[in-house]
Image 1 (cartoon, rainbow, N blue to C red):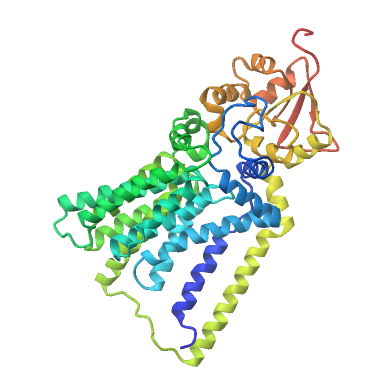
Image 2 (cartoon, one colour; image 1 turned 180 degrees about the vertical axis):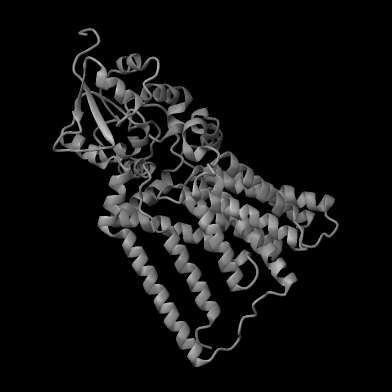
Length: 491
């Protein structure tokens, strides 16, 4: 048969997904996850905070413990390249899990999957959430194959949920999907005139049973029932919505969110122009995940997973209606096969070059130094001040990893610190109200924060504090360090 154009297109999709997913690990939260994975492997399960002095010994449900071990193993094996591969592999798995439940020719499927991938990339990074991204694609594959193809693999869901519950609190996605299918199929039975494609009531009962079994499977983890509270405790934090970008509504002034809007517009346009209509389950899943994405930008990737196969259904119906379907060729000439082989070789070569350009040590080092507080961490490691440190929230995660012998004041574990503490921290970092009292009450001896921050401006003029960084030998435009030179009593 030779190498058909359809196969070349399939491999083209794979290669483009790899290119989209290959990115330098610059997220500051990556690093406290790495340290947690290392700590778990070395000292056993974490039940109380071992990394900060401000909340030392406080109970902490480390819901990402399994993912952290995987992430740390990738780091141990291949360093930054391991983190790049971790992100890339999970992103490709999550998107390709959707391929079997998309419809149409390989050209349509590839096009729709690329639209979905471009939309989802906004929050792809070397963090445990990537495992939830991959599992959400697999989860949706099982449910849609049950609905559309009568392929019953629902028995996989409870063990999948057991694994998910030991990897990341994103297991709530699984319950969102189950609720969407149960509610949507029930609505279909009540309101749809054409019952074709609707799961029978007996099948809906089975989905309900699977959901109950999944809840039971979920509590089989080192933290037991406490794991069930984690998602609710997290979304209840007001400080997340007020100050953390990924927990805020998307900023549509930023170009990386435009693909999300584009996907919504495509769904609206194609569903309006095609005669296919909406299925209640599909409609509920799209509306539900779109609502979550509008509420919290980090859920854009969840919307992309749900919307990708559904977009293919409407696109295929529209193309069929217009008579614009491309009919695959069943036979190709030897010349065409050789040309396809050459195209595939060129594609693989281009992908390898693109990936190598990202994982070059110089490329990674520059990107990380531009984003992470590497220079100031190196200075602190060489010249460690004594006493308690007050640090920027944005840098705490990196300090947990890079300065393992220096307990942080705060880092990205918002579920540990809670609203009251984080609000108090933010007032201090901004130099508002009682910042002096906080530094005194918490016995802070030195401060490392962003240059130009409110606290940095105040400390530059405050008696009893002296700036020790940056220096002529250690220039840095991002960070500044102040040390206390006298106590409030002495002042």
